[in-house]
Image (cartoon, rainbow, N blue to C red; front, side):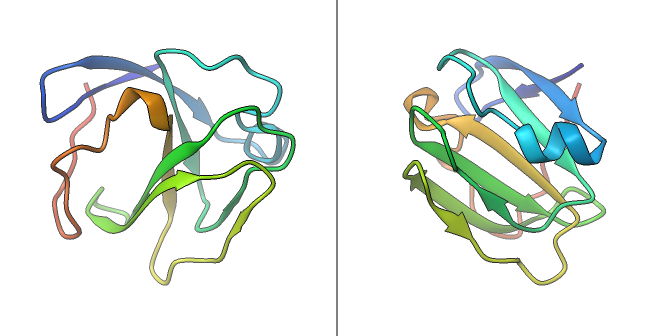
Length: 109
């Protein structure tokens, strides 16, 4: 498990999805909570069977932000982001992506 420190100083645990099954299932069926999910080897996402909205950061190999998608509704598909190799997802209610912008490098602890 990693930890993401939001720009407002909130420490958010981040689970890692590093297999096809873990990436496919993602946060489906999970209750909304104070945690995130890092999808490795991934450049697009879906929110099928989700119960809440997601925010997502699409990252390159150096953890630079390539795209930011906020308030992705359940049963949506986000198309591939060119150059993306990781996606970091959070429940939108956390507002974990506040004050972040494309080009910023994020750090995990």
